[in-house]
Length: 242
Image (cartoon, rainbow, N blue to C red; front, side, top):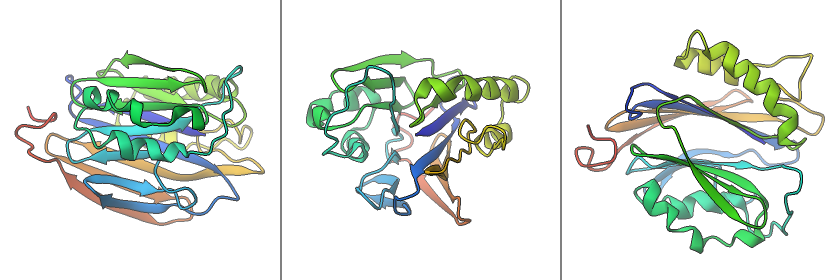
């Protein structure tokens, strides 16, 4: 239950802005704001540990979204999907992280999407409860991924239409922010800033990635904002060096 957008700010895709709404059940604990642990900057799930989004000192960034598609296999869920990014982001690049999936006990996890991005490529992994597939995504084009506990297909048309309408004229960071804060009282469950009787949007995580630095703004819906900055290691030689 999340919505992710990425807007490239340069033609080569090196500089970009990413934003992610996290939607959660009301019964879950409040997450912890971003902290730097073992070279990985990420917020932390207070219930299961782990995280849904993170960036490391090499500039590799990752996002995990729940997947709710008809026909998916619902495994036990005994292993949290929040453990995926801490394991994969030990690697410095999408290519190297892609070789680490053997470390992940997939068949003890519920279905998910995982997007990984560095300077050279952007790859979407999809796990339906049985098999893991992946495909390259255009690194120079705007991206939208959105899911819902109601069923991904029930919210995607509404949010995709809004995304296209808002960003077709002004594909900039302010319009991206407006998209992620959008709430329509007529369609509360389909809104990007969603609300249902049992769940709501609880936070928005924003990244601004440049050549040698990455900043993260973590906005908690209850009103607090935490800002952190990460200097990318060996910037002159890293994936984000020009």
